[in-house]
Image (cartoon, rainbow, N blue to C red):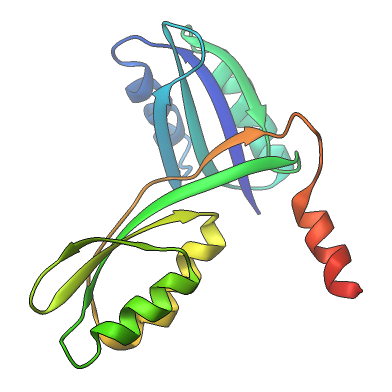
Length: 172
């Protein structure tokens, strides 16, 4: 199972290196990693997606807390969250298929951010599932380049689990 960890750290040189070294020493992979300033000055938020069962994640959490600059570790996998990723996607788009590429990209609320004679660069923002879906849909045109950020997530203050609401609505 993939777990999403939200880690608050002191914003100092070498913190990310120490965290990634901790994972490497224990043979764990980080599938996604995003780092940026948090709400408090001098603090950064690291959001990472890590494969493993509950026992492995609990052990990693304990190891992270042993690092001096780590302030808080939270496994937000089962917590209602707002999750987003950014995808930049360069797609083959000639005059004969350009309108179809644009039409399909609009379904995903993608924005065209660059145009050339034979390609379009799209910007897509959304949950990780949306990223996979648009790549699959546009694959037939030929994908030139893909750049994808890691997942970022914040817990929902309302506590409303939108995934649960979606599943309930699907049953109706």
